[in-house]
Image (cartoon, rainbow, N blue to C red; front, side, top):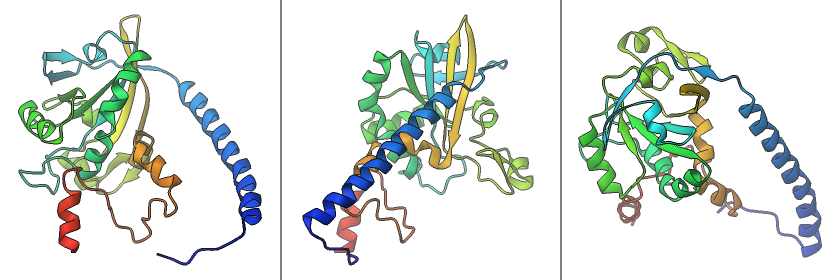
Length: 241
């Protein structure tokens, strides 16, 4: 553990009050960003997308499940990832998805549906979902342009010649990346309202909020992707012993 400043209670109290001012400003800026996010133009979705779901084939509007708002997480699964048959799901996306189930009832209570999608056969998603113990809706976009059109997957040509990811050009993007796209259903028309990628999806990771409160924070200075699938931490601990 790195050396840290040791002080008196009075010194701590003074530093804490100063930090509180900065925390309040950070919260106010976050509130303003949320308002700006909600003020973005709504873009009607013209293309028809089809998904394989637990309840048969559905289009994008049907994924809303009768609610007016949809959060759709682009989960990296198989398809060019450096994974094996036992671990076809991206480790980072699995970390994100661990936070979904507890949020779903609260989101539904505010007229929001949360769904994950992946370019993979539905039966493969079922197997991994069962292993991880997840209950949230997870659909297959295999055979659809959806993940490509919303900037989370890239064709062979794009991987060679470059494409836009996270609103900037990437020379050689991987086959797929993580992301979140948001939609609203109004007057029978689906509109795209927002998408975020890369570190933008961190707002879905409640664990980071807890770690940011802890004395050592995320403790990522070494650049190590410390997170694992939740059933792998014990095995990693044993490897270190």
